[in-house]
Length: 87
Image (tube, rainbow, N blue to C red):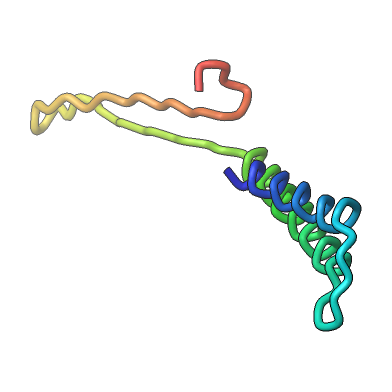
C-alpha cells in the first residue's frame, strides 16, 4: 500500500508542478508540487525497503525418551528464509 501511496503522491506533485499554471500571492503551487514529489519518493523507498526486508521464522520442537520417567520427546526444526519458494 505504501508503494501505491508513494506513486500517487509523486503523480499529484508532478501534476501540480508541471500541468497547473495558476499563480496566487499566498501559495506557490510549484513548491507544493515539489514537496509532494519528494514525499512520494520517500514513501516509495520506505515501502520497497519494508517489502525487501528479510523475513525468517524458526520453529523448534524437541522430544526424547527419558528412561527414568518413560517419556517420549520429539525434536523437529524448521526454518523459513527468503530462499524458500513456498512462502
